[in-house]
Length: 175
Image: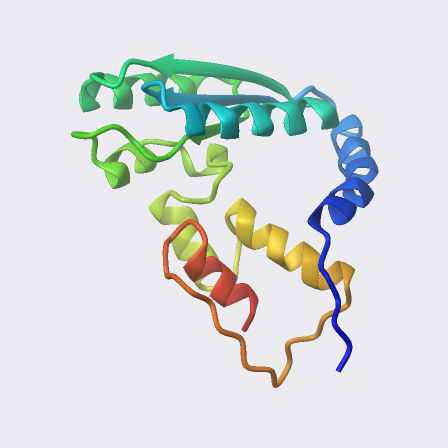
């Protein structure tokens, strides 16, 4: 049995030119808004990585930071305003949310067509049925498998965890 180390960085580097060309082929420069609640250092680190990646492929990124004490009604109103803004093409809610905010309510406030993370109920229903886009980590796993030509047909795969963000969609990709 041969051991193969799957190098995500190598795969990412081969994908950059393709992604850049896809963005250049658009008739507009896409605008992404990332919403952060509070000031968690780990969330800030993830946001910076997302921002660098997006900007590298030609996507404009705006980060909106709201205080941890923001009320749910105000946050939902802010998201709905972004939904109505034709210059905003994608929205990401950086998780986890601060205490007192209902994750499902906040995420479902995003217009599904602007839901970059594929976590709204509508997007989840689609990917649960094998349609639409999957959350980013699951897409990454799929890209790794494709790049290394790993066929999972008739294979047993174990996925640890069943979160909506990683576990469930990765399990579906590995079917």
